[in-house]
Length: 394
Ligand SMILES: Nc1ncnc2c1ncn2[C@@H]1O[C@H](COP(=O)(O)OP(=O)(O)O)[C@@H](O)[C@H]1O
Ligand SMILES: CSC[C@H]1O[C@H](OP(=O)(O)O)[C@H](O)[C@@H]1O
Image (cartoon, rainbow, N blue to C red):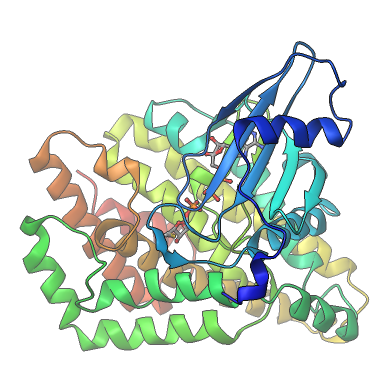
């Protein structure tokens, strides 16, 4: 992190968080307010401030990663980047994002709409809740944000301006390491039970697998297709039966579309792997639906596009969607593996209390991840993906 990042910065306290929102005139000067720190993520503090008649959220970045502490410095610029991604994506899908009420680059914070009436999707799915509109909404979110920020929608000057504006090297490096590198090597920060050592050793010595991961990582490093969310797991989505809101795009940058699509599908797959046969059907349907809705909206936008004459060439759309799908399957494989044996796990797997079931599911997750990475060229439809999953569920 550049030293100058920090000038004027101070970490909020509960008291100064209240003062701050009062200074924005979001509350009356004499209004009685309560404040609570509710952040459960890896990186930032989140304050919920309420009075009798309203509530807001302040999310503040620290100059380091909260989960590790000061030994892992991290740029404060991520807060501004997150607010800017919310605003840019908000141009296309305002109904699927929290409203940004204010942002402050110096204090590295964003004030936004309080979504506490909704549930974090990961928690809801773990407790067996069903969100009938979730994948239709996420499919729409993915198609509209990713198409509208791509070369298929923007003049090349505008697109390149956005690529520069949303440069996010420090946060990308975390993904490059934690998703696409460390789990495939014997690195200290990896985190897995001793009983998985044999399966993990097989990964580390599998050069065929590593060669494919190298290609997927290279796409992440080099393919500036669209402005991604960059961390679209089920912990970054709030939902109810009718509403869906995507939060936390601080890993946003210009990258391959298949990354966002693949991360979302991967986190639905964790639920496929932990549920019994009857309960998993709704999740399999959600996986099918997100791809169907994404490709439907993306195709409509493509057909209306006037920027790029090649969009009119027969087969161009199908060829691009096939590329996105293949990229997504590779990302699914890497995400399944990293959340099982790397730094930063998911509650879906770690929360399985019975250790023999937990280890069984984790081994299946690693094997499924490897198979998807290696065979991704042969998995070209969502039905083929669902068929592949069958072999790893009991
Ligand atoms: N707009 C919001 N409304 C209500 N709660 C929120 C909001 N934004 C974040 N939170 C809460 O804070 C938690 C952490 O937020 P998140 O943006 O994921 O932080 P991090 O970047 O540290 O992962 C969320 O899981 C949620 O419980
Ligand atoms: C130490 S960063 C690891 C992990 O944390 C981020 O998750 P979140 O901000 O949603 O808690 C992101 O997924 C990173 O890969």
